[in-house]
Image (cartoon, rainbow, N blue to C red; front, side, top):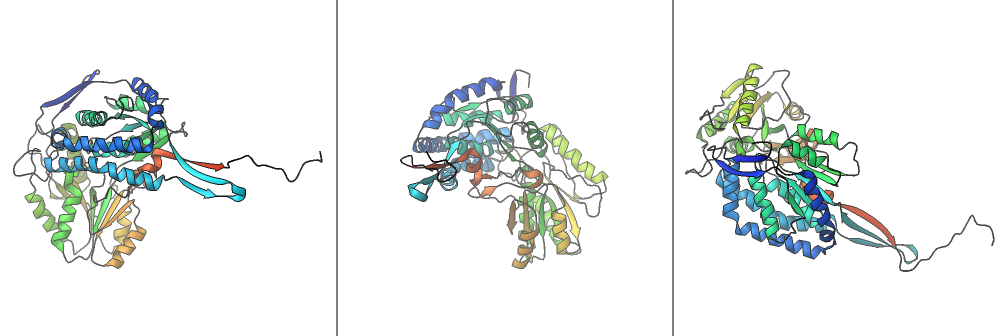
Length: 471
């Protein structure tokens, strides 16, 4: 990667996949602002049908799109296909959400007056996308933003620019005007420039908590701009008094190691009852030994691919070694089968009773175990984090789930399901360092348009009943 271009390589092979010139944030924002008024003036029905055409365009390119995502991220092809299917499904979900969350309403008032509630788009919205779901997650911002009548400048992660370019091409192929959805290729500098552009009316971000905090500071002087932050998590999975150890182990593995642990909702901490934990831990270990880790198109299909690049693999390995240096007991060591490629084996490490642990999101296949004495201690340990994105309980007793749901601090709370099982037709977001109270997914409509309240009458009728001298 040079100062003037971005080069994307396949993490599984190191082969160059794509290259493109670095863009200019001010130029892209100016184009979007010039195109926005005509798009906002289109009837909602026109914008809706145009986005339905986008879904059809993506559907027609599903195989090619999934292949590109798999090659650029290193994730298995089956998982890349599910991501493209989510991109397609997002359109109908967003249309339903917009109708429900921003519906026009009218009320009868006194003396024939009427009140109305309608919604307007903000204008030009910047979208900064992540690398782990480089199509689905930014698309979750872009589709509702366009539907509401905004123009969008989208900067994909510098690690997945090819996927971002493919996505924008699909929007243009569907008839979204060139100026209404713009692609900004670049790295962190271009992201900061886009966030600081005076021509934007808001920024929609999915990424790390550290980057989200920096954006929050950057937007401190511009309260007139919308800022929606979808950040990470140090997510707990509590397994308690369940007779089905096999299913609990599968849920733990799915929670912690799908997408090579590169999900913001991945379980980072497994909380278990001390003394009754060994059968579960042993079963998780047996499953880890069976996990196939390979390149995206391998046969048989892998459960896990690589992490995004060698620098990330180095960082995850370093974080795992740091846990050992702090006193952790490794049950499954992390290994790197190919020294020059970012494949990592899942790690399982017992961190019970160790003080001074970093409250951080290790964005890779590392699951920490914490043994506790009772369920109150399990809830306390689950809440022992500044984050609050997802949490899950595996237990047979509904009363335990009621206690868990009532006391755990998270925006996604599941029962006998993985931590990463969040439906697209529901709101998605967290508390604490996991977001700024602007949940996405079904509730994205809330931050893509603002409500306008009007008092209306067909004719002017007014009088002043007190406080005037006789004329």
